[in-house]
Image (cartoon, rainbow over all chains, first blue to last red; front, side):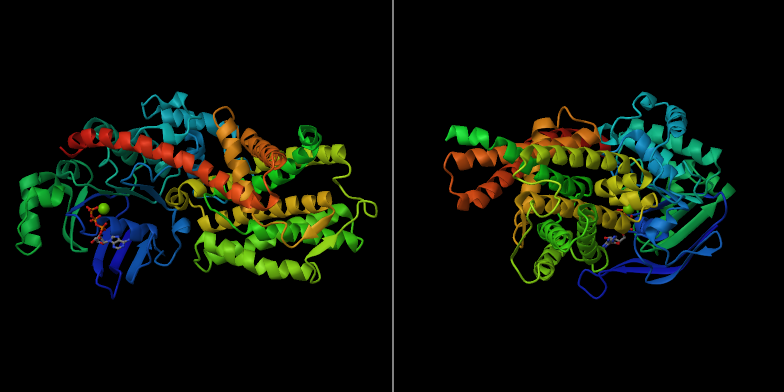
Length: 264
Length: 307
Ligand SMILES: Nc1ncnc2c1ncn2[C@@H]1O[C@H](COP(=O)(O)OP(=O)(O)OP(=O)(O)O)[C@@H](O)[C@H]1O
Ligand SMILES: [Mg+2]
C-alpha cells in the first residue's frame, strides 16, 4: 500500500539551523493497516506525514503509494489519495465557509472542479445525514460558518472531510491533542469507528501511549528521523506502557527514557 | 455654497458608483483572496486608455469595453505570474506590474499623458453631461456584475477561491491548486478594475495616465466603509458586494462634502490616506482588546489541557 524508501529530509541545510528531520526513513504499510506512531518531540513524526502529503519535497528517497511513485507529485494532486487531519483544529477547515460548503470542498477532493454549483441540493441532505452520524447535534447548523464551531466540533468535521471520499490513506497528526479530554475521547471514538467501517489504511501520530497501544493493529516508534521500533498484531496486543519505555531505551541505544520524553 | 453641494450630488453618486465597481474588483483580491493587490492603480488607467483608443479609432463601444476588460485581465495575469511562478510577495508583485503599466499605458495612449473622447462624436455609455443616463448605466453595470459574481462564487471554482483565501493548507489538502485559484482571482479582479476605468474615461471624457493613481486606496475605502456600515446586516454575498458600491458612493459624498467645506483639492490624497489608515486600524484595535481578554481565558484552561 505505502512504501517509504530511505527518505531523507534536512531543513535549513548548510546553515547553523540545519536540522536533519528524517534520516533514512523506511516504512512499509499493508492494505488496511492502522498504525499508531509515537516518539519524542522533534523525532520527525509530523515531517513523515508531511512528506507523504507532499508539503515538502524529499531530499532523497522514494514514496510509493498503491504501486504509484508519488515522490515528486504536487501536494494538491496527492490530495486525491489522502485524507488528512491536523493537530491544529483550525487547519483542516475553512473558517469563513459553512459546514456544508466545507464538506462539499472535501467531496470534490478527487474530482475536477468546474462551473457547476459548489454545493448541489441533493448533496446537502447527504451531508446532513453524515453530520448527524457524528452525534454532536451539528446537523441543524449546516449553514453555520465553521469558524463559529469549537475545536472539537471542527476536528470532527475535518475527520468527516478527510474520509467523505474514501482515501487510500488517512493521516492523523495528533488530531486530538488540542482538545479537552472528554472531547478528545469522543473524536478518537469517531475516528476508530470510521477507520473500522471503511477499513482505511491509517497512520495516527499520538503522544498518548495508552491510545497508541489500544488503537490500531500496529505501532511504530520514531527517534531522530528513523523508525526504531515496529510491532504489530499479537505482539502489539501484549505490550503495556512500561514495555514501551523499555523498548525505547533499548532501541535508542540506552538513552535515558521516561514517559515525559514520549508524552511531552 | 451648500446649494452647490446639493447640485453636485447626482454627479458624485455617479462617480461613486463607477469607483464602487472598481472597489468590487478590490474586494475580490483583498477580502476573498486575502491579498493586497496594487496592480489596480495601473490596470484602472489601462482600462481607460484602451477604451478611448479603441473607440476613437472607430470600434464599437461594447467591443471596446470587452477589450478594456481583457487588458485588465492580462495585467492581473502578469502580477499573478510574478507572485505564483517567481515567488514574489503579492504586494511587491503588484507594485512591479503597476510600474510596468505606467510605460505600457503611455504607449497605449500614443505617448500622450491625456487623450480626450467626445460624447458628441462617439456613442458613449455614460458621460458627465448626461448624469441621469450615467446613473442608469452605472446601476445596470453594478447589478449585472453583482449577479455574475454571485453566481461565480457559488460554483466549484468560486468555492476553491474562497477556500484558498481563507486557508491554503485546507485548500491543498482538498485538492485545490492554490496558485491557480489565486491567479483566477487576481485576473478577474483586474479585469473588473479596468472595466471601471473604461467607464470613468467615458464619464470624464478623457483617459489620463494618472487616472488610476490611488485607486487601491479608494477601493479599500469603499470596501471598508461598506463593511463598517452594513457588515452586521448584510450577510449574503450579493448584498456584501452591493455594500461595497454603496461604500463607494458614501465615500464620494464625503469627499464632495469636505471639498465644499473648503479643503484644498491638493490635500485630498492626504485625507484619503488618513481615512483608510484609520478605518483599517479599527478592527485591529478592536481585536487586540478582545485578544487580551482571550489570553487570560486560555491560560486558565491551559492547565487542564496539559494535565
Ligand atoms: N518547516 C520546518 N523548517 C525547519 N525545521 C523544521 C520544519 N519542520 C520540522 N522541522 C524540524 O524537524 C524536526 C522534526 O520535526 P517534526 O515536526 O517532524 O517532529 P515531531 O516528531 O512531529 O515532534 P512533535 O512531537 O513535537 O510534534 C524538528 O527538529 C523540527 O524543528
Ligand atoms: Mg508533530
